[in-house]
Amino acid sequence: PHLPVGTNPVLLHLVVCIHQKTGLILAESGSGLLLVLAQLAQRLLDDANARFATGHDDGRLILWDLETGNFVKEIGKGDGAISTLSFDPAGETIAAADESCQICVWNLENESLPCSRLTGHKGRVVCLAWQPDTRLLLSAAWDTTVRLWNVNECRATMLINDHDGQVTAMAMAPGPTE
Image 1 (cartoon, rainbow, N blue to C red):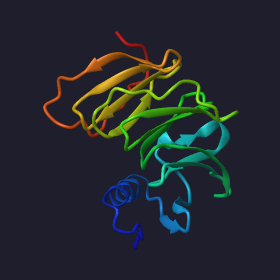
Image 2 (image 1 turned 135 degrees about the vertical axis):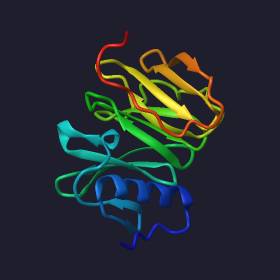
Image 3 (image 1 turned 45 degrees about the vertical axis):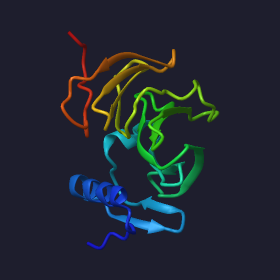
């Protein structure tokens, strides 16, 4: 199918990946990339409230109603193009990384920043995953590192830098760690 995303290679890659994994049909609107129809990748979906979020190349973060496809509200704005985002397991906050290599976490109820930006990566953050039942956030970046963040304390608690190249994906396994 035709997926009009302009010439932005990051958006094109995102559209193709989501379409291949979910069958989701994507269309472009005047305000950027609008995701329509059923299921999004789990890290973008807030099951409890049937909503999903989109990050845009102008830094905007927008919340949508999954059932109707309607705009709910603009949550915040990053310093540059949003590269990845993820709801926490409770669906109360959302983390978003932008092209400035920083991660910001918004509280969805009052849209305030619960902490300053999470900083430390030197390359684009491309993946975020929350540890279930905690306030710990894992981030992977093109700077060859993975970081574990304590969101409440606004600090990295672990740095994994034994990678030979850019980290392009990661996932958090459910269950206890051993």
